[in-house]
Length: 220
Image: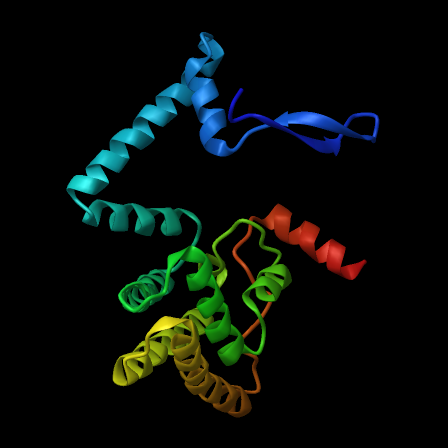
């Protein structure tokens, strides 16, 4: 009960009433303690996931293979998967730089990421996710190949500039982010002018039912 709290949520009668809630970790711990055969499938799933995690620790390449297989199952092309993984490597190198130069925690990473993203795409990460109809999903998992490429270019340019100036702390790294994002923005605008097509779009890889619901909501 220490980790369970009450929040007001819409009840069956339509009124806001206090409801017991818990985060995912607590809910899974509760499931583990339930002495019922009905909970057994979830317990088996937890054991499987735990074992896979141990395998990944012993052999990190397995997690990459698992990610590749996941994307394949969700209809991504080999070309998209390759670009996604290359983009992730670029992202990891940038965050490694930030970590070693006085950028502390996910909150500051998110601020810098938003600066870079808004600079190259002219739109914030939050707004971009809303346009694509995303909530908890990873934005990069719903980018087109072109979007992934320009995101990677912005990140690569940011790290190169930060390294050349030995940027340290939020102010200096934010400035590097603006310059790096600006390089990708110039390339994006040039491509759009030559092709007549926008790079940044509302397209996503959500299941058909979710895409249909999103479209109907936007039409309203």
